[in-house]
Amino acid sequence: MRPRAGTASAATRRRPGAGAPAVQRRATHGSPRKAVEIEGFRERVYAWIRRIPRGKVATYGQIAALAGAPRNARRVGQALGSAPGDLPWQRVINAQGRVSARAPRPDRGLGAREAEQERLLKAEGVAFVRGRTDLARYRWRPRAGATTPFR
Image 1 (spheres, helix red, strand yellow):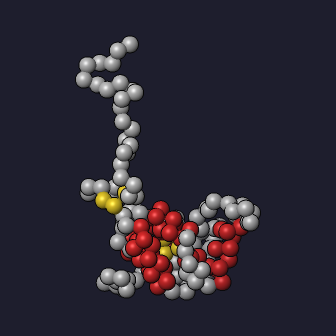
Image 2 (cartoon, helix red, strand yellow; image 1 turned 120 degrees about the vertical axis):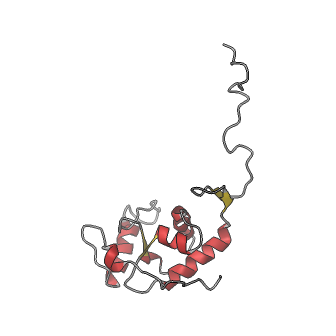
Image 3 (tube, rainbow, N blue to C red; image 1 turned 180 degrees about the vertical axis):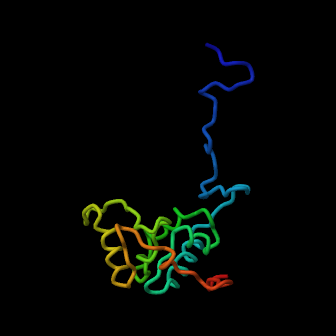
């Protein structure tokens, strides 16, 4: 069967993103695609997480927005994967008020990292009921106009 006139055959069609630059990009709703500069973003994420007070939590999306890249909550999670040891990583949870599941590591059993995060938060005074915290009560709300040291 021959392809219709004016259409490319399956062999000559390009996959979306094929030949795209190696820069990591993320589309934002309602705006043209723009590159998210990874290293500077990580540093801004870490600066905001360091500001979360003891006994309070922030969501991944909240940190992404504060770091200047709304709709990049997954990138916050990726940044936390390579976070420095002194970072209070346990204070970042998902938008449902739960501790997010993580990929298992060979040195720890399934669910051990999530249990550790919940234990650390409970030690700071954050209450959990059936694995969920009350974001209305424990969510950190920075003062209006607060900026990171990098801005």
